[in-house]
Structure formats: structure tokens, C-alpha cells
Image (cartoon, rainbow, N blue to C red; front, side, top):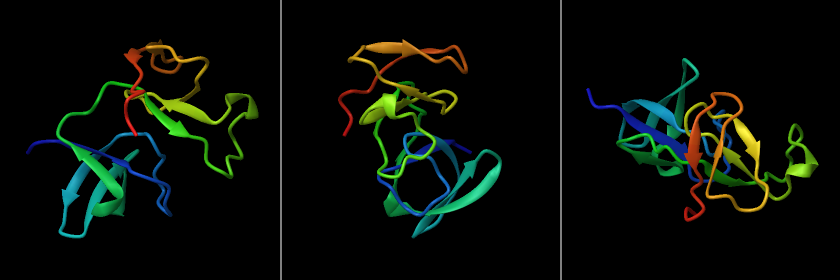
Amino acid sequence: MELYWARLKSEGPYPVRRGGWYPVDEFAKEHVLLDVYWTPVTVPRSAVEIVPTRPLRWTVVPRPPKALRMPESWGPQYAVCPNCGSRSSLEAAPKGMGCQQCEGMFPIAWDEK
């Protein structure tokens, strides 16, 4: 079976972090079943972007309006590691950066909307 990956397109009432890529366990007409840290989560198909290969670029995510556990010093956006899903602050506009959690080095997807 071919493995697909999905991430949220926008904020929603789902237990899925924006910017993180999750394996798709099952496809249905109206929804997909994602593997969110070994827990199955059903999300409407229209709410996710689905790709056949996990991208290896940091995702730039706008700061949520009610970001309670995110330092104010991070500013209006942050980055999500493509490998481990760890969040990181974005200072300036580097072409790439390393992840303190998994120690991977990846480019940043500044061109994504």
C-alpha cells in the first residue's frame, strides 16, 4: 500500500497541529483517517492537503489568535519541522535551518501559502 501524507489547510476543530504532516491511514469519500501520534483522527477531506511524498521543508504557519503556549517573542509566524513536527521561531528569513529536536537540516517553504 502506498503511503500518503496530509496536513491541515487552515484552522479547524481538529486535534491536529497546523503545519505538521501526518500519515493517511484510510481514504473515504468525505474524510480521511490520519495517524496522529498513533491515534486515529478523522478529518474532512476538504480540510487537508494530501501529497504522495512527505515534504522535507519547514512549513511557515501564521500565529493562531489564541496561542497560549507560544512565546510572544516568536512574533506573527513560526515554523514546523517537516521531520518531527517540532515548532520553532523564525528570525529574519533564512533559506533553511536546523531542528533542535531531531537535529535535521531543512529548507524553509517561504513560497507556500
